[in-house]
Image (cartoon, rainbow, N blue to C red; front, side):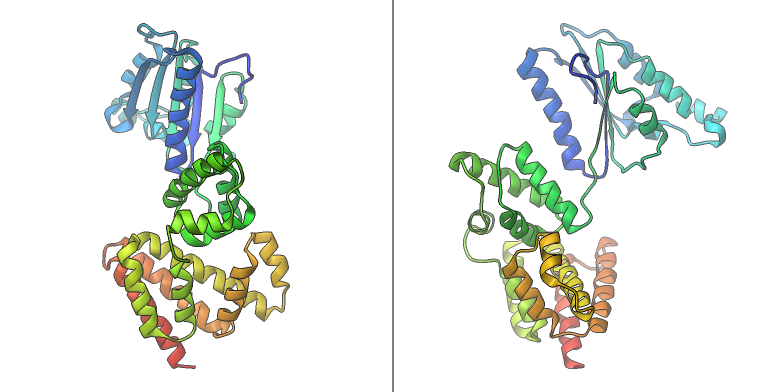
Length: 348
């Protein structure tokens, strides 16, 4: 991070979490307006498809118009950088307006004080990536922030707690665990719900609880996803299909798919721990799984063998791949899940 006495000339926001990157840019604008009113009034936004190297140089070096600083936001800037042996761009690449890594870094070094250049990079970068190495050695002028999509339950829980804090709210661990069970790794829906919960926390001047999540997120009855999981695990395909169709009338099929897959992953983890005779309570504390959910998962996991659950998991992966290729719809994939569970029980 840049020292408090120096304003960054370059902001590097990178990672697959597009919602957080967008929010970072928005907050940069809002913060400037709150502090100085017109500091970033002169704003230029570019997608790499509409930007050339010559245009980028021009926009970076241009003096601001009726403002103290100029904000230049470039989305996916690394598409301008040509990867070649030795870091040099070929003649063909240069003719198309691409830069070598060294030329790109020279451009960044030349950013003047009157410009704030935002690099909005829509992918995760390894720690040893050349841009990150350069940025970490320029903390006097570069603000660096990575925002990856959470991949595990622990990462998702930590991310949700961070979002609540950033939005000015508070939540208990039980509340976050229940929200995670409802939204899984659907970060877009989670972010929307967290914003709503943060406002409620501010209004009530207290942390939101699990009961608040059930009332505010679901706006009514207890989660039907639990009932669907119980019907699937209990070998009740007709009931499971009826609950699924009710949920499809209320929920987006893709969001519902994420919930079902998340429930199944937890079920598989619990079954593996049962087979190993491991301490389920210790695992639940570490993963922040509430006791009521652990009890349900433990009961459901006992209805299957580990081999059955592993086979079902592979089928879920195949189904997800098919609807991502638009061969089937998410709703059809969910109906097929009910069929797979019914077959698994029929073979017992």
